[in-house]
Image 1 (spheres, rainbow, N blue to C red):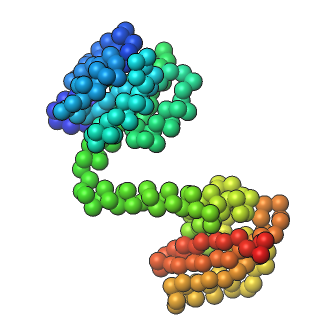
Image 2: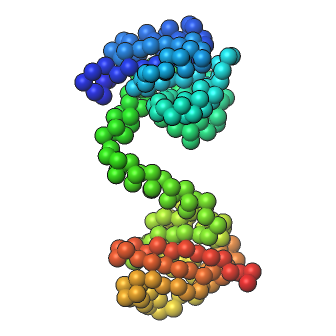
Image 3: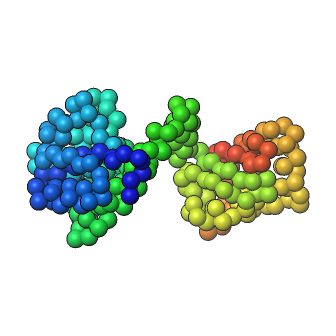
Length: 252
C-alpha cells in the first residue's frame, strides 16, 4: 500500500482513545509509521517543528474542534496534508472542510476501519503528486482553480463550444439565463438555443471568428419552456474552440 520507498509517517488525532488505538493498529498493519494525539492541543504541540506525510483529524473533539486545529495550522503558515474523520450526519460539514484543503473524509461507521487503508493510500498519492509538481505547474493549477472559481461566480453566462457548435463547458449563470440544467446544456449545440437559425449561420460565425479572433453579436434565445431571452454574446477563439460571455439584455 505504500506510495513511496520509505514508510509514510501519519499523525492520527482523536479524543476517543479506543478508536484512536484501533486506527493506529489498522494503519500500522499496513506498515505506516503512526503517531497519535488525543486532543487538539496535543496535535498542535506535536506539529511544532514536525510535519507528517498525512494527518487524520477528528472533526469534533471536546477540547478543540478539528476546524480550530486547521485554523491555527494555517495561521502558523504550515502546510499539513490532512483527512477529516467525522461522525454520521456531519458529512456536509466534512465537505465544507474539504474546501479548506482536506484531501478526503472518513465517516465513523462500523466499516470505517476496512475503508481506512484505501482512503489513506489515495490521499498519500495526491500528496506525492503535489510534491512532484514544479513551482510553474503549481502556479498553473492555482491559476486554473481561480479561473474556474471566477467563472462559477460570474454574473454573466459563460460557454465553451467547439467550432461545430457542440457545447463543452458552461457556468451556473448561463443555466440561470436559459433555465436549462448544466447537463441539458452540455447535450446541446450552441445553435439549439436560438429562436431563428439563419442558413449557414454557424459557417459564417466560424469564418468571422477565424478572421478576426473575436465576435460580438445579439441573439434571441429559446429558454426552457420556450420563453424568449435576448442576449448579447462576445466570443473569442483559440482555433479549436469558441469561448463566449453571454449578457442577458432581455429587460433592456
